[in-house]
Image (cartoon, rainbow, N blue to C red; front, side, top):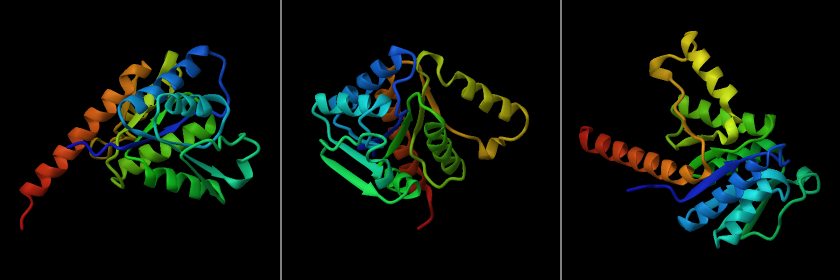
Length: 199
C-alpha cells in the first residue's frame, strides 16, 4: 500500500527565463490535486512556488504553505490556502516541510531550491528517511546537477552502500506516477522486511 499522501514541492520564488518552468509547475499542481495528493510548499505567491500552488488550488487540491515570518512580504505570501504555517526561521520551515511530506520534488529554482533538494538527498543517503526524492529536470534545467552526481559517483565519493537515490522526470506529467510507484515500492519493501524480521 502506498504511503504517499502529501508531496513537498521546492521551486524558485522567481519564474525563471523559460516559460516551460511555470507551465510545468502549474501542471504538477493540477496533477497532485487530481491524484488526491496534498501539496506542501514554501508559501510564496510568486514564481515557481506560486505557480504550483495555484495549479493545485485550481484543481481542487489541498495546499499547505510554510513560510518564515521574515519572508512574508519578500515572497508575497499566498495566504488564500487551506493552511499557512508561519515559522521563525529557515530551519524550522524545512523541518516542518519534511514532517508534513511523504515525498519531495525539486522544480527549477535557485540556490535555496538546490539546498533544500540536496538536504533531502543527504538525509535519504544517511538512511534518515525513505521518502522518494524527485528531480524535475524541466527543459534540462537540472542536467548539470545530475551530471555532477554522476561525476561524484565516478570519482569515488558516492559508495554503492551509501549511494544517493533519486528519481529524475523530464516531464511534469510523469512526476506523480513516478512518486506513487516509488512510494508503493518502499511500502512493499518495508512490509517484506517486517515479515522477514525475527519475532
